[in-house]
Length: 165
Image (cartoon, rainbow, N blue to C red; front, side, top):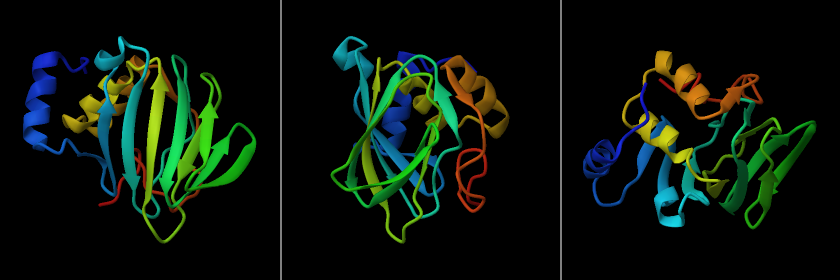
């Protein structure tokens, strides 16, 4: 799958409506709050809302650091060999090359800001919202230097690899 170009970005944004929210996977929505284009590539900031039992598989970013700011709820997090709960008001930074995963194991949604620096990974999220299929996801993550190294933190967690039906 090719990286989403600027005309496709505009088309996707029109399809989403004025609010710009998109489905990352059923039970998880996101919005690009600050684009890499707005920061000369320095960073991208996403806002993500994850419903209970949504999360991501264990992975590594080879190109960027990832910073989490928890706005609402509590995020269950694994960073290397450390597991922790990050409640609202917490921040977690993961340097590139460090394995990590997160999930929402609470009964309420988690809302967070995720900042990638540098910020070019946002095109991966744009491609996902453009309708990347399960078969295209492996190539897509590889294109953006995101290496899946394991399953989600728990068997009952929904992710883009095992979405809600």
